[in-house]
Image (tube, rainbow, N blue to C red; front, side, top):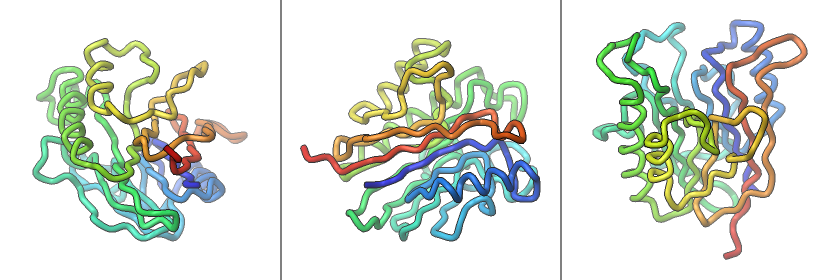
Amino acid sequence: MIRVATWNVAKATSKSKKGRRIQQIIKKIDADVFVLTEGCKELLPEGFVLESGADWGYDPKPNCLRKVLLWSKYPLVNESLAEFTQIPPGRFVSATVQHPDGDFAIMAVCIPWPFAHVDSGRKDRDRWEDHITYLDGLQTLIEQVQTPLIVAGDFNQRIPRGNQPHKVSDKLSQCINGLQVCTAVKLDKLLIDHIAISPHFSSSKIEIIDDHDSFGNLSDHRGVVGLIERSNS
């Protein structure tokens, strides 16, 4: 059994009260692998961490902020930031997790939101442009992997489809063709943080990480925890 979690924590840091509450929630989740998006390394427990680059075309404040961090209880090898690909920089990391039940590849993603570099940042993109460019690059990387694979992080699309254009939803389906999005569950508020798994796995349970606690708001995203098993097929 592999316990995989992902959550966009909306630029929280361990120096804020909210960040310290998030830190405790992450610790209690006790994941084997955690994909943290829009967060800082200090929010994560002791373990193995791979961070994306600090430059994604915006000024990061605070400087510890990363779009993607991949954390694991177990050693990470074959690490990559997808340099020299068409994936927009600072939004992707991948590695092989040396899990006791067997190695598997994981891709940690923060797919750009519709307005990335449209009205802010470089201001040189059309709506959804960076998102689609990212999916094109991600598809190429996914197609190269023949081993057990998990893709997790901020997809910036609701699954099942919400109000995103059909061409954008179709592009995501094409990108992750052959993977099962085990977080594509019908909820009152559909998730955009997701976990997708190759046929080497099956999903046995999904748990939602709330976007608030008894003290107030934590993030503008709800996170998710997936219990993933090796498939018998």
